[in-house]
Image 1 (tube, protein in one colour):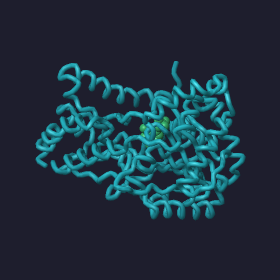
Image 2 (cartoon, rainbow, N blue to C red):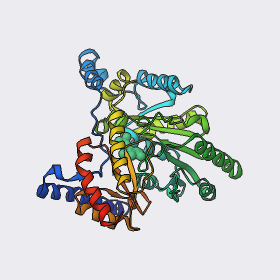
Image 3 (cartoon, protein in one colour):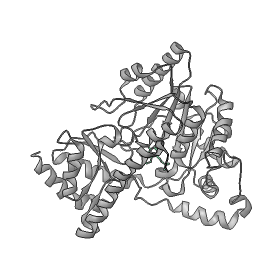
Image 4 (spheres, helix red, strand yellow):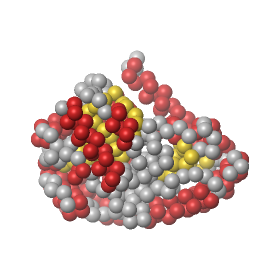
Length: 395
Ligand code: PLP
C-alpha cells in the first residue's frame, strides 16, 4: 500500500526506533539512572518562566477568537513586525514584517522554502556532516541532494569542493551554523568564501542559487563567540529559524523564515512561500505560540547550563584520550571513533550503556555524535563508562 518514495524513510526510521527500544530495554534491566542516553537533541533546559506566564496572560487578556483564530497564512502581522524589529536591533538588518513568514518550526520552514524554489531534478548542496532530514526534505519536492564531503580538520565547509559541485541545476545550498552534529560555528571568512563561490557560479551559469541558512541553534553559542548573521554576506539568502532550542519549545512547533528584499523576485518568493505554507497543510504557524513569541521576543534559555555540560563532557572525554574538536555552539560533541567503523564503536558504547549516534547517520562515518542536552548528573555518572570504553581501545 505505501508509496515507493516512503520505503527508504520507513527503513531509516526503524534504525532510530531500534535505538529507542534498546534504550528502554537497557533501562528495564539496569535502571534508567544507569543508562546514559546521549542520542537525542531534545532540550533538557526548561523554557524561560516568561513563556509559561505569557501563555496564561494571553489567554486571560487577549481576544479569544483572535488568539485561536485563522490569520494570514504568513502569521500575525504584529508578531512578524516584532520579529523583524528584534532582528534589526540585534544584527543591524532592515527587515520589515513582509520579510517574515511564521512557520511550524525549522522543519516546516525548510519544507516551505524548498517547495517554493525546487523543480524536479533541481540540485541542493549540503555539507557533510549534515542533519539527515535534509535528504528527506529535498526528496519531498523531487530535488536531488548533492553532498560536499567533510573537512574533518576544522569541520568548516569544504569550499573548493563546493565550487566543483555547483552545476547549472544547483538551486540551493544549505548551511547550518551552529552546526548539528559538530557544534562548529561558521566564521565570517567561511561565509564570505561561500558567498563568493555562489555569486561567481550564478554569473557563470546565469542562474539563481538560494543560500538557505538553517539556524535552530543560533542562540546556543559559548565563550562569547559571535554567530554572524548570514543575509549581509549573500543577496539570495533565506534564513530558517526556530524556537525549538532557543526557547526550549520543540513540541510547540514555532519558528520563522526570513525572505529579505535583496533576494531576487523577493515579493513573488514571499507570496509563493506563504502559499506553500498553506498547501503543505500547515496553513499557519500555531497561533498561541505566535502570541507567546510576541511577548517573549528577547527571552533566552539558560545557555550556561549547556555550557557547563559541554565543559564537563569535553574535558572528560579528551582527558580519556578521545579526539574531538571543542564545539562553540549547539549541544553536540562530534567525537572521532577509535576504530574506523563508527557503528561498531557505538555498539561497544552500548555495551557500557552509553547511547550515541553513529556519524554515518550524518553522512560522516568514523565519528559519533554525543548530545549534551541532558542533566549534568547524567554526564557525571556516565564518565566512568566512557573511561572504560577508552580502556577497551587502549587510549
Ligand atoms: N535543523 C536542524 C539542524 C536540527 O537539528 C533540527 C532539529 O533538531 C531541525 C532543523 C528541526 O527543528 P524544529 O524543531 O524547529 O523543526
